[in-house]
Image (tube, rainbow, N blue to C red; front, side, top):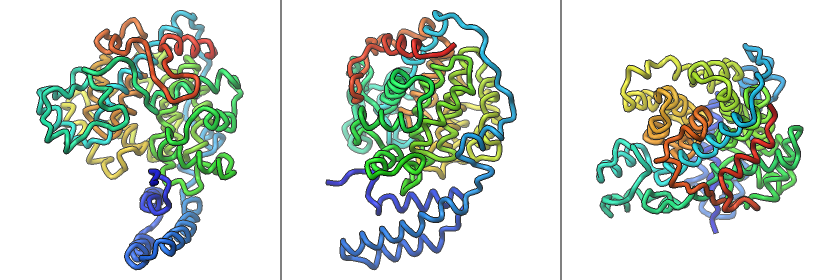
Length: 442
């Protein structure tokens, strides 16, 4: 039985790519790996050589990284903040609850929109939806009218993709992008605001089936089962340590810290360090803080600029967000905007933190405050469609509040969500919002 993401020989190419992104010279190492692939035929010998090679390259990841520009430790990150974040103004419980419900509903709708076409490249999404006249996207994706030949070329996401098509929607289907908000809500309910990274790990291991985790989370989980403790769980043979996994876990930290971006940032850091380092951590900090800002600031560009000051300014993540902020997005068509993003960030894996964060920010800035425009634009941008749809939907939903969300996107959810998290399957989204509000501090 082959289990994705964990075989050493599968991890090595991603590790080499990650090392290069971290500033290491990898030409000789890549040549050495190619030699191993070509010269070792015996399976046992190959596995032994691969393990030794990974042991060798694993030493590079912590030796040559510019730790000053891209730190992973909280105190080092805070030292680089360029703004003082003050306490929030007093907020009413009804106001906070309405915003949080908007976040849960918006996140669900955006995730559901992007789910059928996850893993399909942008060009494939265009080809599929042009065939039945539903490009550009203006509604949940439908399979009606798409030729079988195209569906064979670009099959729907095998993980509940068909169930997420417009004609089949009965609720928010199970998805890791929605599991993590539930999981982090459980952390707050069990341990309170003084929770630790170890508390999060305990919650994972008691509530999450290991095969319902992916990339960095799956490696961190397996590392923990082997007796490795945080933050080494994020580092040990984990080539996905700057991918999107932490970024999709940000929401509850922001919702539970209305108007308190610094509090949301610290919560996000405690979570992210279980499975991620550097830019992987920054993605969760950035979006948790942005969600906290959505309770007190209505202008997205202002909020994005504010919370960017929490990210180490010389990091690749900060540079990517500044690039988006510098773009004349209001003067460009959405296709032109996405083309520019692909030119700048297309070298990253389709589930990396940096390229997807840039696309999310661009979609937010393109929206003119319209929920539908924001979620449709980000899904049309490709890359990690359901994760990005979820993040954009969450931000726009929190910003507007539940009552202002278009019924076209909310009613099909039927206020119900499926989950593989123990104790959460078939939850009502309204109940999750009430529980989140009860765990919030304001």
